[in-house]
View 1 (cartoon, rainbow, N blue to C red):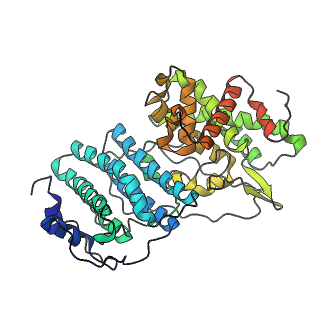
View 2 (cartoon, one colour):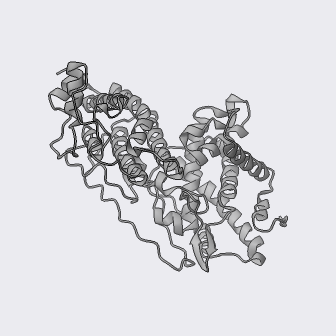
View 3 (cartoon, one colour):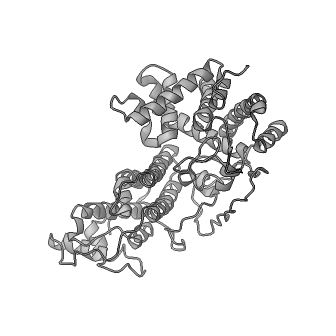
Amino acid sequence: MKPLVPLFLVLLLGLVTPGQARDAGPNPWEVLGDVLRKGKPAPVDAARPAAPVSKVEASELWDAFLTNVVKRSAGESGDASRRQEFLFVLLSGRYDGLSMLASEAPVPDPLRELFVLSWDRLAPALRNLAGDLDAKAANPFRALAEAGDALKKAQGFGDSLGIHITPETLRQLARLVLPAKAGDPLAYDLALDPELRRVFGFGAPLPPAEPSLLLSVSLPSLPSNPLSWLMPTAFAAPLAAPLPFDPETAALAKRLNNWLPTPSELPDYLLEMRTLLQRTADTTLKQRESAGRALAEPFHALYRHLVLATAWQESCWRQFVRRKGKVQPIQSGVGAVGLMQVYPVVWRGFYDVTGLQTDVGYNGRAGAEILHHYLRDYAIGKREHTAVGDADNLARGTYAVYNGGPGHLTRISKPKLRADLREIDNSFFEKYQAVKAGNELDVGKCFTGLDLPR
């Protein structure tokens, strides 16, 4: 059989049908095969076989599918730029789920919605990868791209075909590219995944978090990711050891992690937090360089300003707040946590979710690492600073991505940007300019509304 097998042959020969029990209702592969043979849909019951899954279920199912497919696909490539394509697909898909959960608007079929939103990003990445591989290695990725294309087109017929995006459909698609010994491709958890970090160039996991003693209620621990089913990729390499804080900075982070300042303590707290953020930026620059992801030296000062301004914008340099007499991690209405307001649902696998909640030093390093990625690989990588001839545009573009996801890089140049996003961007840029001018301790106005001594 030729490498580019026509989809109807793939379907009719049963090459895409794993031997698994299917959801109730018409077999999507048989119906698609019938359409391609006869040019018209087979008569089926137009009623849905089951109620669509909820928004929460859909976001987790789609994230699990996307993560497994993207990790497997990116792991087959030795090209860093190709891997970045897949990381863009993954993060964009996770932000799609986050946006859906944040919206109160009803979505009749959330799983279908997420599939349609992501597929036009994933399919080209799969085809690009297939073009890099030899024919045998490329076949599974081409088959997935073709089957997914057909499934997406079938959604245009509405319920008349009876072909719905169900969990079992996603399992069948994922198993086209996953190894035979893989577990359930829709299993979802929040565990740290060292393989995910390795594949996408983040290096070894950050040093373990140390939970704050301020927290009166311990947060649930998360299982480690066994990774037992993963096939080693041709490009696997040992990870460099994570770069810890130096002893002085580690002691500073521990002190701040157990300190909820009173008004009289605020000036000292802000001075020490400034030092921690500055050292976090410096440590991240060194760590990313050791992982082969160095940021060019002319951008180091901009990056340092960016870390302080983002922490100011996101949390006013706080990890914890007191609510109803108890100290809790600061958290946004859509789930971002801590000093840098990192989204656990977007960055699951890359970071220890409990650490993001309970350790200001860990949260700061995670946010600084994410900012480094967005600055280096998005804003600079896509030459955002050349669009208007202003290096500050890099900071604005990087923060826009940090705030809204990979698709938001160029939102600052859009004349008809939503008013709330425009307000967020303007607020950040005011803080960035203050930091650049040496006035970062104006962050104290978040607490008192008064100027603080420098």
